Amino acid sequence: MTVNDLKHKKLVAWIEEIKALCEPDDVVVADGSKEQYDALINECVDSGLAIRLNQEKKPGCVLFHSDPSDVARVEKRTFIASEKEEDAGPTNNWIDPVELKSTLKGLYKGCMHGRTMYVIPFSMGPLGSPISKIGVEITDSAYVVCNMMIMTRVGVKVLDLLGEDGYYVPCLHSVGKPLENGETDGGKWPCAPMEHKYISQFPETREIWSYGSGYGGNALLGKKCMALRIASVLARDEGWLAEHMLILKITNPEGKSKYVTGAFPSACGKTNLAMLIPTIPGWKVETIGDDIAWMKPGKDGRLYAINPEAGFFGVAPGTSKSSNYNALAAASKNTIFTNVALTEDKDVWWEGIGYDAPGKLIDWNGNEWIQDKNNKEQKPAAHPNSRFTAPANQCPCIAPEWEDPQGVPISAILFGGRRPSTIPLVHMARNWNHGVFLGSIVGSEVTAATLDVKAGTIRRDPFAMLPFCGYNMGDYFQHWIDMGKDDQEQKNLPKIFYVNWFRKKDGKFVWPGYGDNSRVLKWIFECCDGVAKTVDTPIGIMPTIDAIDRPEGVTEEDMKELLTVDKAGWLKEVEDIRTNHYPKFGKHLPKELAAMLDTLEEALRK
Ligand code: TSX
Ligand code: MN
Image 1: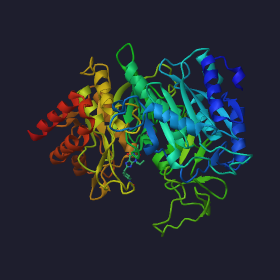
Image 2: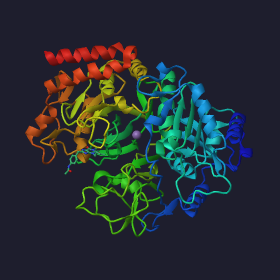
Image 3: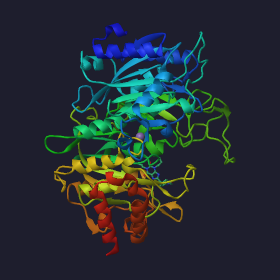
Image 4: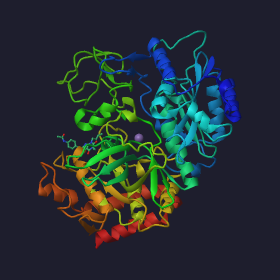
């Protein structure tokens, strides 16, 4: 498909403008067809950028190895370019939009020499859903096109919806590596050096300009850039919520279902929770989404959620049959792997896959790698942030209604983090504002792998949105408060919970987690029906000691540890929020949240 086939005048004008700026060799429109996907994958394989995997073991799968400098989102090179610095707020990098556009135009000039410029019309959310939004990504990376074809809905159907003058979010991307005088990539992953990488969001004009990285959230612009950073701004202005949340469906033995969303910082197992296999007989969990939820109030006052994505861009290491059977099954065919290790028979392997490396591997750097379990210093074969890009409809536990254009009505919202102490297994907020307070204090223990802060300290990641909020985080808190203004007692709005699977005693996890988290989900289900066994505490509403069935290996003493309010610990928590966390937001901190902190402290001191 070419630009001549397009009917949307403004889109054609934008494409011509970018073509004149970036000077590609040619321009191709992504039509969403299987033929085009296969042809692009073939090109990547033929040029040596990708390896086709064993078609018996992994049909339709390929493996890419990125440049070692281009392996993750780059937060220090991510910018919110609002007109006023205050509107980006204290937790975002800000650059003046005029200055940033001028810098970027300098970089984009001629940046697509020797490359094809692809135009990708995509829908975030089911085609034609009243909650969905359309974007168009221009990119010079075939890898990006193929990943976008899995992660979003791409092609002619989107162009039809767009018509001659429909609204779309323009998303510009280049790997930032022009090829001069017949030069080729030579099978090497193209990208620009760190100081030339820019992941830029312009919230007022709703534009995304990304330069210099080909990896994940930096380059697949529908995901973090559009569905979170730009969408959070749209959501604020239009009265809905764009959140970094999984969406799951839980069904009890009587066949009654509820929908639950959950926000967790990275490395808490959000994808695992979304695809959990319950250990309690008769209960079922199905998946709507594993990363992003768009929630809009319906006429009945309930929040309806869609998953704006169409695939999973999951972290591979740690994914095994026992940790996440369903994710492995989803990624067993038609999947793009990035930065995992390659086996001799052209299958994939990664740390935590559940079995030892079968023989000699090629690691993510392209070097030979032989597992040495006696060597604690051995570098991993798969990069710790290596990924699978898998179609959501291949997930065995995907809910039949996952693409319902109306969305699914949400009964409960979960917040959580990795907290070895203080935070109990589960507690429920007293009301909406208390729930917003819990979201605002989300945080995870910093592990030894993070070198910039002391291990054992808590890194706050409010609503798990710290790197993803497209505007002032204090104003974002206020937007959440405002969403509850008319329904404080939550007649229609979801109930809000804080969960913690990561309590430790003597260095060991007290709660077995994974499938046994269904026991906590059951209590949450019962709370939504008003039939749970509960006790009022200074921190909120908690299960009685016998409300949650004990999993095997968890003693009554463990249960007490998990469900007792640690008053001294919570007073320290209050102190940390008061001195280190809330002051960051200055006058943008909602007075309701400051009051909630005072109320909590008073209750703890009683
Ligand atoms: O994903 C996790 N979940 C949610 C599952 C639905 N993980 C992995 C986190 C890294 C991505 C967990 N790790 C969970 C959890 O609930 N809990 C834990 C901690 C834990 C780890 C191991 C054991 C118990 C708890 N047990 C043994 O290793 C035998
Ligand atoms: Mn995420």
